[in-house]
Structure formats: C-alpha cells, structure tokens
Length: 260
Ligand SMILES: NC(=O)c1ccc[n+]([C@@H]2O[C@H](COP(=O)([O-])OP(=O)(O)OC[C@H]3O[C@@H](n4cnc5c(N)ncnc54)[C@H](O)[C@@H]3O)[C@@H](O)[C@H]2O)c1
Image 1 (cartoon, rainbow, N blue to C red):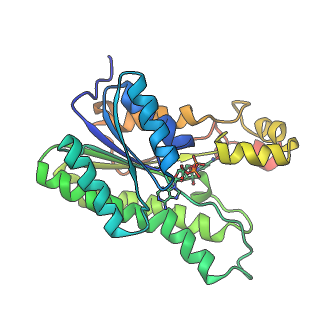
Image 2 (cartoon, rainbow, N blue to C red):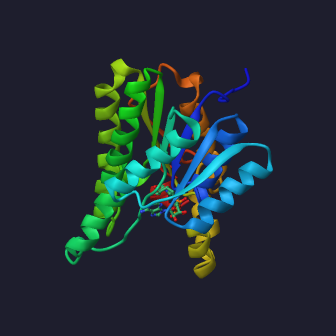
C-alpha cells in the first residue's frame, strides 16, 4: 500500500536541519504540503527550496517556537497558504549537560522550554485548528531515550524529555474524541549534523557507540523520518499516546551496560 498524504498539510517545527529536514522531505515525498519552520531563515528556505525543486509543495516560515505569538504566526502562515493543518511534527530540542549540583536556573528553564513547553504551545495552537476543521489530525513529538533512562549531568534534558512522554499521553487522551492522535518518537544515537560535529571533535566515539548498539550502527535522520511518516499516515490510525523507540535495540539490550 502506497502512503498518500496529498490531501494533508504538515507543519514541521525545526524542519530546517537534521531529523527535521529528513522528516520534511519524506512527508513531501508522500505528497503532503509542508510548512518548514525554523528560527534560522537559511535552513528553512533551503529545505523548502529542495522540496520545491523536486516537485513537492513547501513554504518556509521563520519563527521562534518559544514565543506563543510567533507560534500563532506559524499557524496563520500555514492556513494562509494551504487553508488547513493535518500534521504537526515537533522536532526541536536542546540537549544540555550540567551537574545537577551546579546547574544554573537559566539552563534548567531553557531545557524545559525548548524540550517541553514549546511542544505544548505548538500543539495547542495547531489542535485548535484541527478541532475547528473537524478532520483527523496527527501530532508527533520527538523525545529521546534520555527521557526513559538516566545519565549523570543530564537532569534537565532527561526530565524535560520524560515530561514530553507524559505530555504526549495527556494530550492523546484529552484530544482523542476529536480524533487528534498524539504520539512520540524516542531516538537513540543518531548521526545528525550536531552529533557529526561531536564525532569530528572526538572520532573514537564513532566506532565505540556503534558497537554498543545491537544493530551495530548509528541511526540516521532517515531512520527517524520513517517513523514520522508511519505516525503521520493512516497506517497508524489506531495508535495514540505511544512512544516509538528508534535506537537499533540499544535501550533493551545489555550491550550499553557492558560497553559493547
Ligand atoms: N541527535 C541525536 O542523537 C538525538 C537523540 C535523541 C533525541 N534527539 C532529538 O531529536 C531532535 C532533533 O535533533 P537535531 O539534532 O536534528 O536538531 P537540531 O539541533 O539540528 O535542531 C533542529 C532545527 O531546529 C531549529 N531550532 C532551534 N531552536 C529553535 C527555535 N527556538 N525555534 C524554531 N526553530 C528552532 C534549528 O535551527 C535546527 O535547524 C531534538 O528534539 C533532539 O533532542 C536527537
């Protein structure tokens, strides 16, 4: 069965790079009209152009999702161009590292806003539209396996991502009767541009981490985008409130503890 999203409009928050870019591309390939949202104009423009050049439909929207007025402007831009919103993918996240004993309040607040609060702001704004439209909707939140396990110096990020699993469940139940499905994806170690910079600085982690993953490799942004496509489409029509782990088997294995 071919996945056909040609009657759907998708808003991808953080669509300009990494997992967001791959998610925007795969949704466009399936026929969706894509609203590529990013705080960096160059990134949003580049992805929207890439989609347009390959025959798809997309517009860039430059906005900071931390501010509710800018979130509203995203919704207005999407409605102005395409007249509806059916899919929202909340990609943006901030992974900080700081010991809990010394962490500043500013860092804690920044993590909680950019991993948790903005997802509520974007979901609320889009769900209001979905309820009014009276059509089915799908909201997809990118969490992390860091929200399901614990690591030293990762309290703010881990708490925010764990909270995002909870927010996903809460909104799924609250909006179920409007047939707005809300699900999450928890990636493991993925080769995003940000992680590639880390690997350049410390090349030894590349092979070491691959060996700790049962499937024997790092994840790619396309691996996450595949799960996004499933959750965006009617193939997952009876799935809501779930978190799909995309980590090559890392979380359920003992290789992580044994160090490979
Ligand atoms: N890379 C990994 O291994 C990994 C593992 C687990 C979870 N994740 C999660 O995956 C998600 C995506 O990671 P990534 O590395 O691809 O993202 P990224 O850091 O490349 O960010 C995606 C895009 O969001 C944009 N952005 C940042 N702040 C913004 C704001 N305030 N408003 C609008 N746009 C903003 C950035 O400009 C960027 O283009 C995050 O939620 C992250 O926590 C990543």
